Image (cartoon, rainbow, N blue to C red; front, side, top):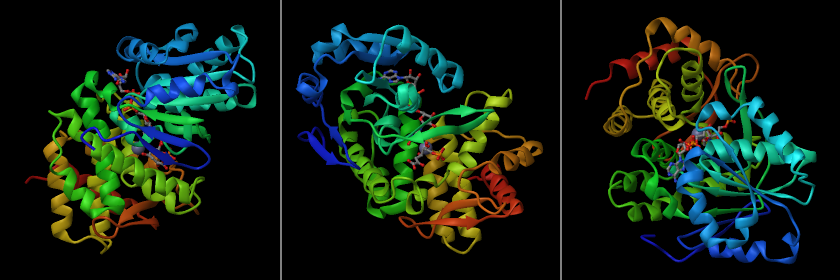
Length: 364
Ligand SMILES: NC(=O)c1ccc[n+]([C@@H]2O[C@H](COP(=O)([O-])OP(=O)(O)OC[C@H]3O[C@@H](n4cnc5c(N)ncnc54)[C@H](O)[C@@H]3O)[C@@H](O)[C@H]2O)c1
Ligand SMILES: O=C(O)C(=O)C[C@@H](O)[C@H](O)[C@H](O)COP(=O)(O)O
Ligand SMILES: [Zn+2]
């Protein structure tokens, strides 16, 4: 959109509103009868408190009276301990069923905040104001909320939609490049699973002029929104959004328990997409040249994550916990050519090991 007019995208019973200046609509909404007298709470982490909260309050002045709940930065905060602390603080501050939680941050804040809002007193209203690329194009939309548990990603959670999602790409101006790239990985996924033209366009994206990203942010939100609206509770088609995640989540979970340096969600998904493209090729669904095209593009943006061959079996153990599995088999979402995903494909451990070796040894 290289700063297109504000977009209103209808979702499952709520709206996603996108655009620079869209927060003016949030200010209007909060001054309506539906929110009159409601106690307002804003959930932030240390970075969004510093980089995003002042801008939010200056654009939505009613929020200057809101209670700010600040948590530590990073994936570790997506935990039952932090959830418990937030439930307690809400209770101490007399939050009632009419109260409202505003999640201002990346995917950690929107996943955790949506979970806390959905469970506190059996559910209070909440808004998402995503401030990372990853949360703007993926995490804030679709209603999957939750926390990690026993070292497993998103093991506990709900489907719980916000009242409205307000996406202002201006927030991205302070986001470090590694987090921009992490979000870009989910955009690549959107192209690979259902839009070949978009995949081709993404090859031209520049991170030096952030405004040039706006058009792609809109495309990604439309893709994600269309998929989740067609299958909100992931009984079938929605599983295509999990392409790259069977292996990606196992790598992230492994990074929690090992000395490996922290692996960001999008980085792990980028690795997962290379491996799962290899598996798609091995199963006769993806041509060799397409596999090479995907792999070369991903390696041109992301450095290789090193995982010792000796722990490949541990990754398989972690994959045995994936939510898509059935009948004791690892079930993956794969691609049948670029732009076309398929679901529920049973994949044997030896093929997964081969894909991890392909990733570890790939050279252009
Ligand atoms: N629910 C879903 O559908 C869904 C989809 C994709 C990912 N996720 C989840 O999202 C999480 C990852 O989200 P993320 O990548 O946004 O991580 P994050 O929330 O940890 O944010 C990344 C970093 O950016 C900082 N930050 C946020 N906004 C900023 C800004 N505007 N300027 C400067 N710094 C800023 C944060 O403090 C953090 O350090 C993972 O837990 C993943 O599982 C959920
Ligand atoms: O919205 C979805 O559906 C997704 O799968 C989007 C993913 O990018 C996201 O990482 C999601 O949180 C994964 O969910 P999970 O069910 O595999 O835990
Ligand atoms: Zn993801």
